[in-house]
Length: 121
Image (cartoon, rainbow, N blue to C red):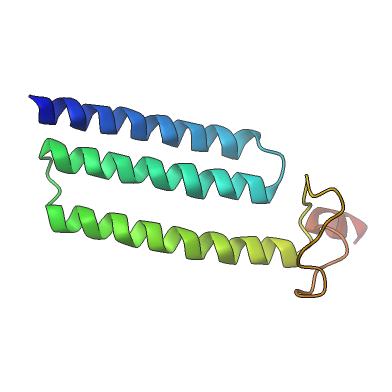
């Protein structure tokens, strides 16, 4: 009985995190903030859901569930790093830095965002 309640709690909290991630992707102003919402809240949410399914005794085998969680947490961090680097180098707009750019001189960066470069042609 207590196992079912904990599994249900994990599933509900996981779905809450996924809804927060979806809201963040839809409402945040720039690509970096949207990516952060998708990878952090989405990663936590899916991890909690897989744990809830494992605890509920669903069709997922324990080793498969654990490997899924490990692979997802490792690949999310690498993928978000590569996407952020590509967005930065393409000139994506960064809000909230107040003129500070820690990567200035470290990475090449386009002068204008892609949207502005496409309109100019």
